[in-house]
Length: 99
View 1 (cartoon, rainbow, N blue to C red):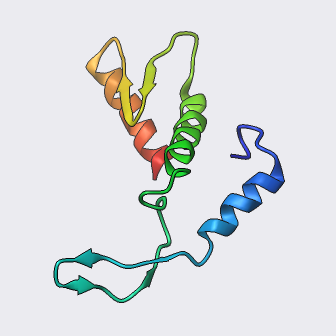
View 2: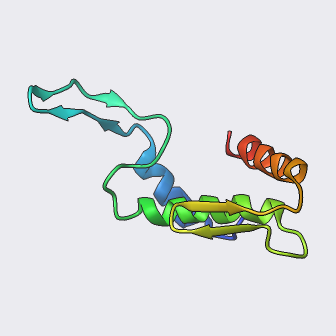
């Protein structure tokens, strides 16, 4: 969010929603004990799709060159390259950045 110029107060508000977040797994046999969620986005939250798009946009900006070699749509990513070697290089860059 910082990389895209989102104001600090809004970043702090989102971070406070995720700090100390706990969840449980619901099954037909009952609910699990609550456990802390340390990675990922809140499942079912209206804010999650927006946060996902923000992260993908920030990552995409890291790799942009003169032509659009990465296309983003919803939760899909298309990586384009002229050779298999270039494609593997771009995919590995995305993987490294994602990790």
